[in-house]
Length: 384
Image (cartoon, rainbow, N blue to C red):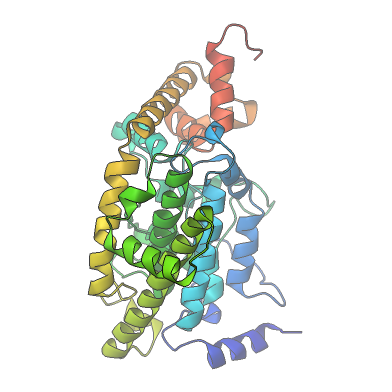
């Protein structure tokens, strides 16, 4: 059985010198004795998985609202896909896979119901009161809102996981810098891996969901060089393949070539910079975990295609606008009538103020719960 000393020896032997070692952690907000045979990041991972906020990701959606169908990705399935891709990249680069997994599993804990439209609605409602950013909200969830331990509020995660959460950035995520988490330092390589894994997962599962919903057509995707080449290679290799299987093979290949390119380019970047420690990473103001220029040029048309044909599709726009109205109306009802909030939520009003408490409550809702609350509050025939 591994003990803490043996975990340290194992990390020194197998992790790269520029990886974050668990024994170099800056610790937790509240001091506590660490586990006998789990590293601090393994412990963080387990705390995240057992949290209520993590379970709620099952009914928080990405592009499609929960009741649209059971097939489409939710925040939970997306999070698991990000963790899987990120661990693969981290393992190949000899980074701390436990830290990568913990950041991956936590990176969406602050997301609202109804995807990014829910976040936009809450940000507008909180504009004069500090705004709303899901990275910061995720930190608030793990630092304050989760109530599981008698000794401290939140999950008491390590400094490095918390830093990875607020510095997470991608095409859909804006990183934030706060004083207590080294705002002027660059994110760790482990955080950068999660950033890119998030984008890879987004792009490819949104294509899958878009095709399944018939909002996207394979014939349109064939105009994209990256899709067209893979499709031709697959049909050439599997002459008698069933049409419905082609989509899955193409998406699997898309993920594979992007991950492979990323690992190879990141390895070149690391070698060029001659990194010797994780502290050196913090001083480099550029993304080290990045695609090659060739892959960037192949991905750009794909991103533009998804924005134009999926995210701006009239059905998605309708769903988004409807979702924003749900959020706005629920928010105003609770704001005008705090007594309509559950008693345990009302208790926080004296601490955080009514507007922030309402924001926390609405942000924590699943799609399904938000729709049920809307019916209870606005449908005269619905039981409350």
